[in-house]
Length: 170
Image (cartoon, rainbow, N blue to C red):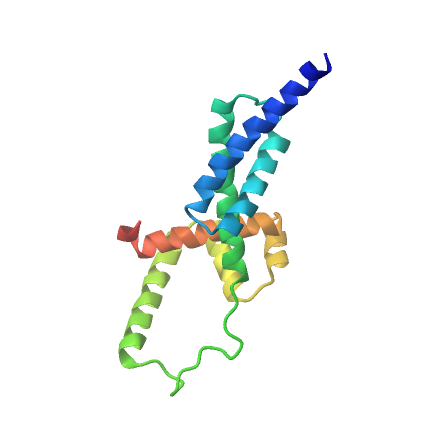
């Protein structure tokens, strides 16, 4: 009787061991072992906490992979937010861009100015406030949302802007 009560727990452990192996393999192909390990843990925790009613492997594997994709996107957004310029700045010997690079820069800025009006109102509002160097919590408050949601919206806005500027690249 005691052995029968323990076997479902072992089956569940084995089941999540297999799912964890699949998710880790999925993430390891895209990231290093340590990053994949961390993201796998987070994805499995999401599945365990949010979907306790799902218990079949055919349902859990795609669900866990989808959760891993969301964890992966969240990680990319975090990294994009935390990238800092070098402490000594971007050093150019003369302090000015070479002529060819200046022309490319001006053309890129022109493309951006033409693409911004094609964005939605919320995206234009976020970009406007970013250019004015308004703090994230103030922008979030003005949009009546959290800073985490603001970062998601901003990431989507940047992606939309990138697609408008380089439509053939996507």
